[in-house]
Length: 583
Image (cartoon, rainbow, N blue to C red; front, side):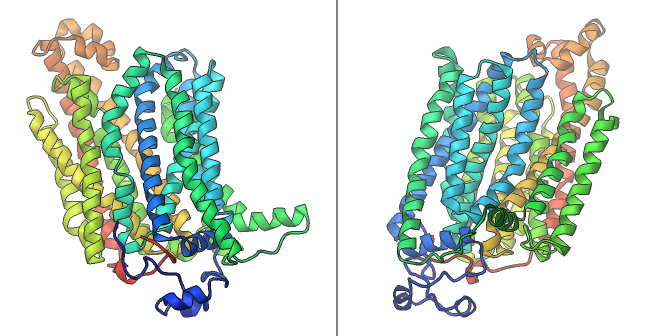
């Protein structure tokens, strides 16, 4: 773990907020003044609490915290991969019920927008409190998944599971931002999430073992034990140091509200309840149409879809106006909404998710149908992106640590390599191309995505103070969700417009009566022998559709280049955002 001398192993000197933002730390003074209030006296209580924790804990505690986070990410990565593999078998039990697809869509959107609520819980009440809440919700969801016997129970379990586990991983990201300097943040984030290199290979065999053995409910039963077993120790570590800081009078005492009404008014103000409701409702209504339009007879022209889009857009505009003119405590300060570095980071997050969901969609099917790979070998090719991204993220984090700059890494490496990798896919994703060329493209994309993810987060956080770290991370995540939703919509539109027409053009005449079955079922596509006229026709149809999809995935990187150009060339090694013992 990197230990910059400006942050590691020293207490902050509690003189005054303004003075200490300009003065260097002094170890002796810090020990003499640990009973005074935290530096950032204007920050909400949750921010002051985590600064108090990092003030009173030791380097050993910091190392233990990161080891615990590594283990939590390991369990969460294994859970995510296992759930993805088991999901078709879970939904098959309720396939005849129309509520099932709707539940998956709604739970996914709820999981995305609830991060804003969790962000305010972290800022108002504290990191340990928000983290514990996410653990409880995640465990409830897992227990319900293991015990569900009806579609109603499955629906509720999906919501709890998504909200809890999404929030848990989001909270870990916030905690890493709390306990690392901007100079080292990319490196620490990459190291903490490095278990993905291992779990991506284990989830498949683990899922197969449960399916062939005790059954999928037992998998969720196992994780309902593993998640709290590995997560609670980190909560204990944080809460114990918070109590220590409180005993040392580092945490300021807040005036207690004398009545229920005063408490309600106080917390509504602290949470910016109006802004939170407007933003969460607006985003949810705006995203729903991108997932539900296919279930409507009239598609995008359906009155329901139009109403959702219009009201969602209106609520988002209302949120911006509220933050600008009326919010007593702003959810996101209006000046941050105009900051070009933060705006560029949000735009890049949108671009990355849009492009990813374009080129990644149908990739497994393409590898099986066109290249003739087995399900296992196709998964190996797809996991190249995961492994490569983690390795490159560590390298990018190390480079930022030594240079103190993040923008040049994206300008000279991240963006060009991403355009190269995705652009080459538009040429090589066609029948007759050797699998080696597709692997090469995967490597290029993995190298760029690992770099861009790290730099994007650092760019966003470099534009804000510690007070707005949690909300900023939720915001760039929101733009990623929007980009992914629109990307999937574009993919679906292209696939539906190109693939069936190409099939009708290439299929032998005697197979035309089976066109709809071939179009809708990958099992039917794979049933035709490689080299047969029908299989060749299907492969050419895949090539036509995939070419159009990957062109869209490449073209959107014009926005990505503009986004990075918007960033200020900030030297993060000169910035001090967090205080106390940090990495």
